[in-house]
Length: 527
Image (tube, rainbow, N blue to C red):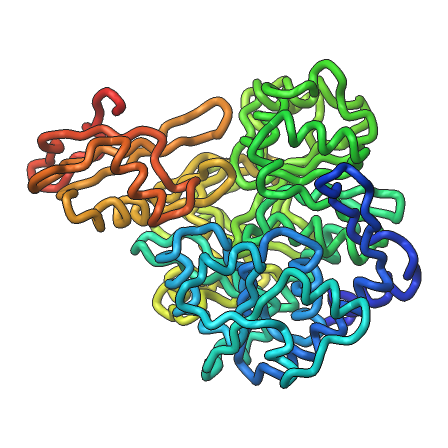
């Protein structure tokens, strides 16, 4: 790996350069008093100490599960894994237990960390104090006090994976899968390092920046927030899970903390623009706003931009989890005057192809499936060679060289200058609240209910969230669930963003002449 792309080394250098600067800003104490922040020097000490313990308790091909609430401890553990060269797997501690169990069964981490406050969410794991990693030896000094105060760990008998060892992974992010089983996207240290290096150049941060960390840690957006900030000497401000749920609270956090850099999904930004004091009071210190994860419709984007300082740079970033960001476009008055924002030009080092249904590259102005090759493209899906083979294809480029391309499933077109425009998808993948969701996984979860016979889930455009899910269900047996009961049951099976906003119960669903459900004909009043 190119040393310039080594995130752990770059963080270490930043910490040694400014050990007394604040790396992670403090959260307010319950009584409103100020707490000291976590300095770069102490953050490095903590991460190094944790890295030593992690390395001593893991072997080749093993990974570490992080089911930890958003906190300084979570950030320290992410850094520690990078220092120890042991990939981490972030797991939402509040996701339904069946989903978390599937992730743990697939990744099989050697260690599983959990926050003390969410330990009860892991009834099957023998969580114990961090001294379990050191044979009873206490963690040393102040660093150990901070780490040990909110963390528990489970030591697991994991054999390790040749796939993990061969690919030099930094982390694995689990996303929605069409079969109903989450799929683990492998991100190598080289993938992550290249993205951080590019982003630090394209959207530089400096020691005066205050960076809001908005997205969940099991999402891919925090890679910019956390690693670009902490390799640049900036201060990271963690937005807790409750704050980000409420637009007004999110806005107050951004304003009161003087945030200068924010990266979030359009649905969250649109909610802040519509349901907070942003339009009246603004965010005078915000100088950079990045968004990604779903399309930002131009009317809503205009409203947001109008409420920001004139010199705030707003940028649309595009790229699935499997590639991180691969195209980008600055939001300009000229683009805001149009009907739809482009996804822009490829980042340096990235090559894109537009492929027709016949597998032949399209001309510049024609529409085709967007394929991506470059240093940020995933090695594949953990423990899933079949899905990897479907997603990664080798194509010969214009110079005759063979390159591995990721099939995004997104369709796009390009203008004469190479600017790409998103044209939608052709499969069951949708974006809702910034999360990528396979409608097939939601349908599979609904069909797991013992009194559901059929289920169809449709994406429905929504002005704030981009897309919401609309379920149409045929029930069976005695005492079938009504829509509220089914939504409540489903909330225990899948994350909240995958629970359909509406459920309609039908006696039967329309079918085609071949007996298949006629999805395009499914409709009716919401329940």
